Length: 454
Ligand SMILES: *Cc1c(COP(=O)(O)O)cnc(C)c1O
Image (cartoon, rainbow, N blue to C red; front, side, top):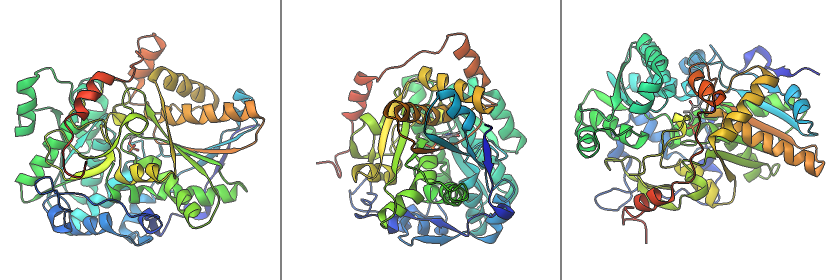
């Protein structure tokens, strides 16, 4: 029994993105101005983002057309394959059917180009010359670098320092795409200098790198800011994953009972899960959606739902989200893309409405599952993606124990070809299991802003 691949006829890709805001029983709480505590207006965001993306950020239209030029580029790697993992099912001896949507076939090896391309497109259309952004493990920086190069935009990437040192190949990839990559915290911004003064050895965090990237965009008229996750328009762009999956599951004559994605800022999880949650909200099948995060950065499972800043230097609007506190610097574990103190407001909101669940696993459990998956299916998952794999394997084991033949679908958000040092460390027994860093998170949470939080 070999694994089976499903591709849509003529590599069909969606004509529209799906916006869950149209189907939510309660609207998303507004973003607040950090100075006044009042809801911000779309114009407040215009120094950072082009108008078209701000419109998408606040839109409540259910279907938003994907411009043809973007579809042409996405067509280079989309539709992405959906696999039935029969060899993994056999290895687990489970009655469950396991499917995975593989986003590692994109040029940079993850789901991130699904939003990097539209973000570059809309910035180019509105006359922007340069993009300032941040990256954790380098997946976003390389995807944004590629998209900028395609549209003739300059790209400056602030890369979290620990990853900058651990992942020279990701840096080289960014440079191959013509992007400039600097380690964060850096001495090139006020935000970076303030951190270095307090802690010269700071390993960096996404919260810090976002501050640096936003500062550069705010101070330069020809420069705008791009974010690889968290924001509503990013989640919107990622729904091509779930929309394709729905059609591919239909081709397979099946439909998921459980949909799973790993969650750092929440974009690939939302990408695969929101179209299914939308169907549920419109009276369709009651699927369970599970976001899986690392125990070392347990935003959804341990963080309260509060208004907080998106960055460490407090340059962003206040957003209501599950948060560990904007000053929390997660430990330097291997899944760099999951080291963010907050969670997408839309994912946090869906969680508070009971539309989804969250689970946390430590990195040894995650890598163990990643290796088991590679042995069965041949693909080496990105360290981030191993969290989705362990979530899917645990559900399949539950099905075995309960004798249930449920259908499990998960998003394999990227491949791990640039992350083999993490696998070497795992095989040599060098990975540590970080537990919930209670004391540090307590400290970070004591600094939450007062606006919006009674
Ligand atoms: C960036 C990244 C993630 C985490 O980001 P989300 O916005 O939560 O999807 C997960 N997997 C891979 C491969 C990534 O590159």
